[in-house]
Length: 290
Image 1: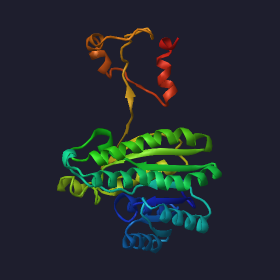
Image 2: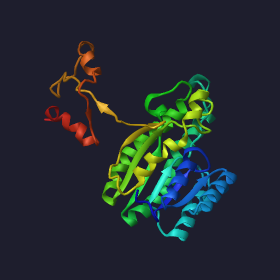
Image 3: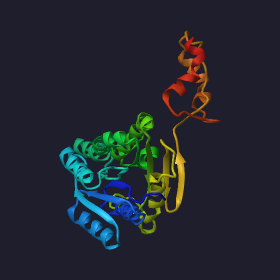
Image 4: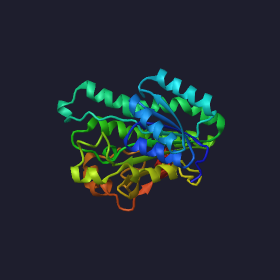
């Protein structure tokens, strides 16, 4: 993988997937900014990378604190003069059934997992635009795609990351900036109380890093992908649209009874289509827009 001398910022890199990714990037010759809210974890990760001949700088940042992010970006640019890859990996969970969830639990998870991605990306995107190149990798979750009991806050944040990515792939294309999503399941502090013990022990973060490394490399040209990954299994997820049913000529308003009669066609996903952007979806409605 062509990562030698590339500069990568990795959030949540003090342990788990972020730490494994930082170490793998460094072994491939990348210069790594190790970012985490825990200073001791940052120091340990940087020390390990350096001891193995890699190049790394450590930053204690809170992804909800724009000042700490700005200071980190300034330090990276001062040391290395560019930013090639951003891996938005930082996250937290505060699980509760929806009816018992507090406003603070909901807002805190949104602030870290979704707004944190916005904050860090916002701080580096102009640099990538000026370079006319860049790679942004956002860690979502299968919880956001499929749902999981007791995680409405986490699911909302993680699917929000997919929406953010869907737009960034379009806006970044003219500047040669690729934006992709990974939806990993791996042993970490976030999944310790969620995964059964026998699975937790097997699901090493190292299974995730080959995917992240490929997506960050020059060999990968795809953008806007959502890739699930766990335990050596990798697959693409996508939002698709079924064939549907035309119940109007574009002028007549259908009756509810017509919706009911056509319900099986409306909800069918037989021969679905993937639309890369909104205008493609509107194209299907062409005959009705006359």
